[in-house]
Length: 471
Image (cartoon, rainbow, N blue to C red):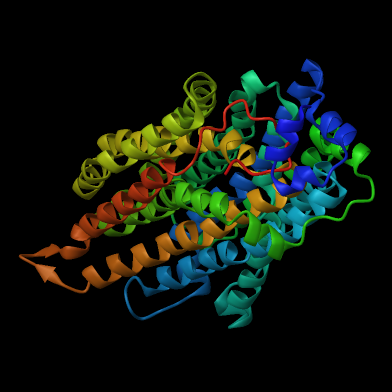
C-alpha cells in the first residue's frame, strides 16, 4: 500500500497497522458447495419468517378482528387487528440493534440460530391463544406479546441472511447470491397462502373453528428443519477473517454507528420506503380491501397473493442478476419507478372487483415491482457499510424502515377504508373509492426511494473488508 493511499484513507483505516489493513483486504471466499449450502440455509430462515409473516397477514385480514378485537363499529375490529401487526414491526429495530451487535461481536451464524428460534417458538404460541370470548382482554394482550417476540427475532433475520451471503459470495456474483435468501419470501408466502386457501375452501368461516391455529403450530416443525440446517452453517469468510485479525477489538457502540454512518443509514431508509411499505400494503392491506371492501371471496384474495409469490420467485434472483450486470443503483431505481407508475392502474383494477384482473395486477405490483427491489437490496444495503458494524447498521436500517413504512401502512390504510365506508354515495359504498388515497400513498413511498438512489454511489464490486462506509 502506498503512502498516498494511507494518507487519503478515512480515520478507521488510518488507525490500523499496515500489515493488518493489507490482510483485511484479502477476503477469502466460500467454496462453491458451501456457498450453495449457505444460500439454502439462509433461504429456509427467510421462508420461516415470511411463512409467519404471511400467516399473520392473512389472519389479520380474515381472522383476528372478530376473534380478538370485537367492535360495534364496522371495520374498526380490523384496525385493532392491524395495530398488533404494527406492534410487531415497532419492536423490530430494537431486535435489529440487539442481535445486530451480537452478530458484529460473536458472528453471523450464532445470531441466525437465535433469531430463527425466537421466531419459531413465538409463532407456534400464537396458535395456542384462546379467543376474546374465552379469556377476555387477556387474549389480545397475549397476541400482542407473541407478536412482540416474533418481531424482536425477525428484526435481524433477513439482515443477517443478506450480510452472510454478501460476505460469502464472489464479488462478480454478489447480487445474485445475496438475493437468494429472499426466495424464502416466496416459499413462505406460497406455503401460508396454499394452507389458507385450502382451509377457506373446506371451512369458509375459519374464524369460528380451531383450524386457523394449525398453520401457526406448524411453525414448530419448520423451526426444527431450520435449526438442523443452520447448525451446519459455516461462518461468513469476511467475519472470520476480521476476527482473526481483530480478536480483541470492541464492537462499535450503536451511538457511534448512528453518528458516523448516518448518511448511508438515511439513504437506506429512503430506499426501504417503497420496498417495505409496498410489501405490507400489497400483502396485507390489498387482500383486506379486496375481501372486506370490494367483496371478493377470501379464496380469490389468497390465490392472488399466491400468484404474486410465484412471479416474485422469478423476479428476485433476476433482479440480483441484473444488479450484478448493470449496478445496484440503476436496477433499484427502475423497480421503484415501476412501482410508482403502476400504483393508480393497479388500485383501480382492485376497486372493480374482477378476480382474474386483480391477480394480474397484484402480480405486477408486488411480484415484479416490489419484490424486484427486495432482490436488488440483498447486496445493496450490506455493501453500503463497513465490515466492523455492517450487521448492526443493516439491521437498524431495514427494521427502522419497517416501522415507519411497513408497520404503519396497513393500519393507516385500513383506517382510511373504514372512514370512507361510513358514507354512501349514490347507493355505492364509498369505501371502494379509498383506492385513490391508497394509490397516492404508494406513489409517495416509491418517490422517496427513487430520490434516495440519486444520493448513493454505486456499490457493485466494493471491497467488503473495508472499514469505511460507501459515503
